[in-house]
Structure formats: structure tokens, C-alpha cells
Length: 445
Image 1 (cartoon, rainbow, N blue to C red):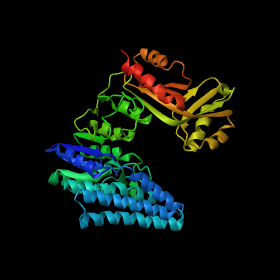
Image 2: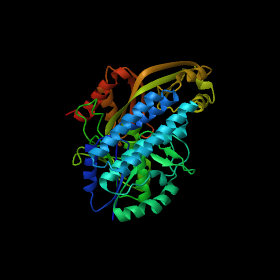
Image 3: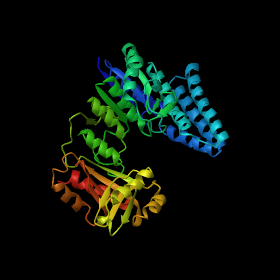
Image 4: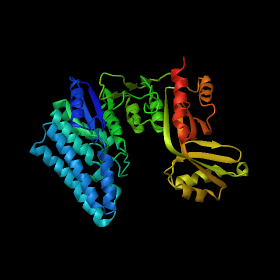
């Protein structure tokens, strides 16, 4: 019997009505083994981070108010689903009491460790999975018993070999007897048994990890849009679904702001040769995107992506070309500060890099002053044109530059991987640039 991993995001399990839709979709895959991976109910993970932060600031009254709202929401959902049994309510209450105890500890110590934050953050998935499993009437597997990670709390890295063994020992027997099993995305545990998380958006990653470990036929990512779009539909109203993408195209789009799919999802899936589809929970028979081994959009521009909150940091040194090791010294500063650089542009006397505005810009400027004159341009956005045949299509540059004629461009980069052409513009102009590029690549006669 073939097996499919079905991951449902926060909006897909955000209410009793949505959970019923999930149950209907899962039932439609009758005849296959189904591992259902769920996120926390929409908004809950953000609330959990807020609760922890409030506790650290000794604002426990407000933290408990939010916690009560969270409890009310989950209990009301259980009641609407007919799951307000003593067993379900006791399980939910146990998870909530665990949060309460940690709030007290954080308040007492005035300290919030990454380990404690992961324990709190895991609670949303643990609660939603109780409700989905109850609705489906199937076993619930605690993902922490299978998803073994290191102890890099907040962004833990999976131990794939250990996960495969644990999946074979603990998960496969359940699937063989019930065909449907529910588990949580986003969470795992280290060798010591402490709860870890895979980073924000890590439920997609979990689906890829489980799919690879189980050699699934397919990994389905169910969300609130019809696959990966040619652009953000909130910006470009006539954006359309891209039918087929390569793993490389998806990873590039995700890295540059497309939020439908967590970038790391691609890695375990591609290594296992498993296709991934992105589907809409509210339109289960609608359009969807397939990312399949060896597949490609075959287009010079498959889709556009945009990331805001970008800054450009430039270092000018007239004698740079005569200084052996200049770039090594420059990038050592970023490495020492733990800052990831996106795009890089060099000239005879200047090096410019783009980075997230949340980076410690003041500290970087201070460190880099010894290398030359430093300037920072903030309030920028990067827009990426992504397509597998971009480099082989000379007309792409003409089309792109014609579309953005008259727009001030700070930095241009043709990606080393040959599938990405990126522009950095002022953030206030970014949405207009997106619409112009979309019209040029997808709407021209």
C-alpha cells in the first residue's frame, strides 16, 4: 500500500469548520496509508511567543489573559467538533498547565532560555493534533518520539539516520494497523529528550522529514492558496498558479520571500526523490503546484518573489584592488557577527552587500570603518525573477529592464546558480516593480 504525507497549515486547522474540511480531504485518500502532519491553529504560535516574552518582562497578568483566550478557543473548537470529552479536555488542560508552569518559572527567574521557549512553542501543534486525531478517530503520534534533532534550540537540525530508525520502529506499525496517523509538524526532541523546534515555518520541513523517512509516494502541503503563484496575489491581483517547478526554482523563490513553502522542505524530499504538491485546503479540487524530481518549469521566468526589510551596506576603499585579502577581511566581520549576506556587488573601489534590516547594522558599520568608508541604505526590497531557463534566454534582461524603466535600482545580481535575476529597489517602489515585471513576463500578448 502506498503512503502519502499530508501536511495541513495553521489556516487549514484554524477552526472547527476547517478541521472538518481536513477530515474530508484525508478521507478522500482512502486506500492509502496517510500520515497527517498538522501545524498549530492559526495565530497560536505567535501568541505563545508573546506569552513567553510577557513572562520575561514580568507581565504575567497579560500573559495569563492570552493563555486563557487560547484555552477558550481550543475548548470551544473541541465542543463544536463533539470532542469535549473528559479525555480530550484533560489532555488539552495538561498542555496548557505546562505553559502556565513555565510562565511562572520565567517570571521568577526573569530569564527565557531557548530550551524553555521551544517547550512553550511546541504547545500549539500538540493541542491542534489532539483535536484533529480525535476528529479522524485515529492514533496520535508525538512527533518528538520520532523526529530526533540536535540541541540547537529554536532552529534544530534533524538527525536523519536516527529518524529513519525511529519511524520504522514507532510509526510504521501504527500506519499498518490504522492507515491514518496524526502527528505534529515543527517539533522534535534531542538525545536528552528535551523538546526542540525546527524554526518558524518548520511544519513544512517536518513533512519533508517524515516523507523521506517513510519513502512516501508524495508529500502534500495543504495551505490557503492554490499552489505557488507567479507572484504574491496580494500584490498582483491576476497572479496565477505555476503548474510545475523544479526543486531549485522553489528553493530560490522561498529564499527570496515566497512564503508558501519552507525552503528546507525541498532538501529531504529531493534527496529521497519524492514529489511535493502544494494544494489549497479550501479548494481541494482546484489548481496546485507540483515539485517533482527532474521537473522544471522550462521558463525563463517561472515566478517572481519579493522580500522586504532589506538594507544595503557599502564599503568604499580606493586602494581595495591593491590590498590582498581585502574581501576576506570584510566577510570575516559578517561571519564574526553571525550575519548572513544575500547579494554581493563589487567594483574597483567598492563592495556592496544586501542583508536583512534586523542585522546589527550599527555594530557592522563600526567594525567595517577600519576597512574604508561605510554607508547604509535602508528601506529597500529585493525582487527576484526566477526561472530554470533564465540564463539561456537573452531576452530576459531586455524584458526586465524595459519593464522597470524609470525605476531607481540600487543593486542588480544575476545569480551564480543561473536561475535568478535580482533587483534591489526602494521599498516604496517594490510593489509597482512587481506588477510591472509580472505584466511583462506573464501578461504580454
